[in-house]
Image 1 (spheres, helix red, strand yellow):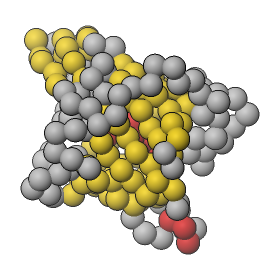
Image 2 (image 1 turned 60 degrees about the horizontal axis):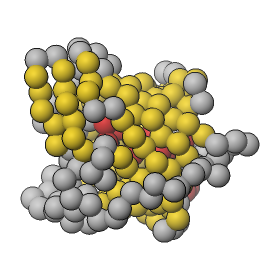
Image 3 (image 1 turned 45 degrees about the vertical axis):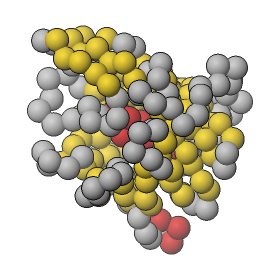
Image 4 (image 1 turned 90 degrees about the vertical axis):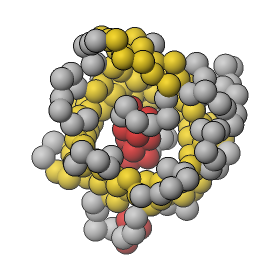
Length: 194
């Protein structure tokens, strides 16, 4: 799970020319997880650590707001149920999740930026480049040293895949992304990880 002695950096890449969405997640320069979409119509993902299945993410069918449920593949009693991620509004991009008795909020900002809060305190910022060449893109997350690997992986996968509330245009093999359109919370430009 999360933890460490210094500020953490996560990087997530979408694999080039993959028929289904496929991601590689790195933590402090070392591969942490691989994630692959399962099925064409719903955004369900299977997350592996090496060959071990560690996380399942399911998109729930909903008419008005986006909903996801993720499961940690661990026999510990604290992981015996699924954890839900729910959109808090149709236009303003704010998602919320209760995980291990903590509240997590993911905010999507206009400038290709995202922020994650734990119990109303910011713990991470995520940014990406505007142009993805040949289908390859990269998100970089700077986080507090005690951030949880599971919750970071789930949020990074969801914001990375093509359908997750971002305005983008496709020109041949180059994807130009503009980020979210409306904000529930302004990005904190002065925030630094601890």
